[in-house]
Amino acid sequence: MATKTTKREPQVELRKLTDDYCEFVLKGTDVSMANALRRIILVEVPTIAIELVEFEANTTVLNDEFLAHRLGLIPLVSTRVHDMKSIYEAQVGAWVARRRRHYIHPVGYHDREDKGILLVKMRRNQELKLRAVARKGTGKDHAKWMPVATCVYQFMPEITINHALMDTLTDDQKEEWCAADPRKTFRLNKLTHRVEVTNPELYQYDGEVLAKAEEMGKPGLVAIKQKQDTFIFRVEGTGVLPPQDIVLTACEVLASKIRNLDAALAEEARRFDGREEPAPMQA
Image (tube, rainbow, N blue to C red; front, side, top):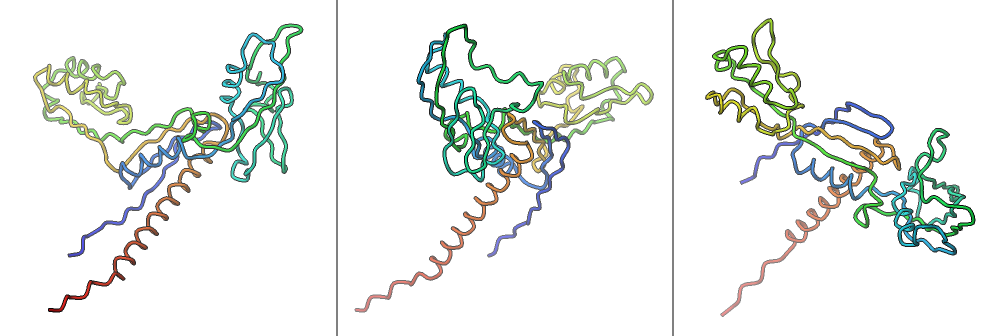
């Protein structure tokens, strides 16, 4: 008997986009896809970071290992990362590395108002000379290749107020109940004397208003559940890539994984269908 399947058509609603922040709503899918997208954004979007450091001279107050660690964590602009297949060398004091017309430099290098990233403070007669090698990598290898400072999503809350039960409370009790939510998701309308939802996305599933309703002897004042097909994504980049490029690259990686899985399943089905049954044994 064939199983009935429902085709999903995910949709994306962009809410906010800046140089280092992106907020969007993913609809029409489930938590498995939302979680897969988040994981890919974190650890499978390639960037450039310093991998190897060779010191020729270091008389600063910081030892070689500490400086190498700090160099590795410096965010390098990676807008041409998909065209890069080789390693790149850089010299301290000449931060722009050039090879095959590709450029690598720290975030904010061309911003005159940016003071740059402090590596170490040096006194007179102190010396620091090193050779750094940067390469392409992903967050799977090390956190220094992660393109984001944070990537989180939350379920869209679905809030239903039981107004019939709520109307049994006085205005003071209603305000007391609204104040139980630290994010101010609810408010009392002074004109209608009814409790309203200011913004359902403010609710953080902490259960404070549910506990307050129980305390007041009015369980069921509100019903709160998570929409299982709507997710609010917030992506904060480190500056190495524009946030829209991070999300689009992650979507391409996810689509590639789905195509590879589909091809593998199709190949397995062909092998199964072409398999011959063993011939019956004759007496």
